[in-house]
Length: 190
Image (cartoon, rainbow, N blue to C red):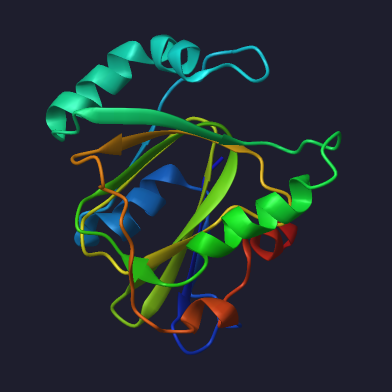
């Protein structure tokens, strides 16, 4: 189930809101144009490929693509692979790319097929940490200051929606705010 934790931007130890209530989460995010939907999940075989994932969610993907409009869709997957001695180093590198605060010139729309990830939204002097899990579709408007944590041992598969081929180009703010906020693993441990 989705988790929202809201903290002042200058004090990560003060929790203003912490809830798993989907109606309350939506109400907290709506003033910023951020939407969160929950879709029924589909049981897929481990390691299902892009075509299989997209086929399983075809009607929802087509609806979101049309409404966006988001003509480009792909699937990204990162799951633990203990048979690869370099897996953790690769995962750490992938995680580090998203941990600094940034914006995008287009909406960031992700549906979590499996696993977990956390969007941190820096809005009006607060940080809204939104932990997304399987079944969650999160839509963050272009220009929203944010970062993303996939955790110390990333495990997720997500459908990504784009307007342009180079749609996920990050404009980094240079802020170090993300270093002072709880990580995904810390949010889930409390």
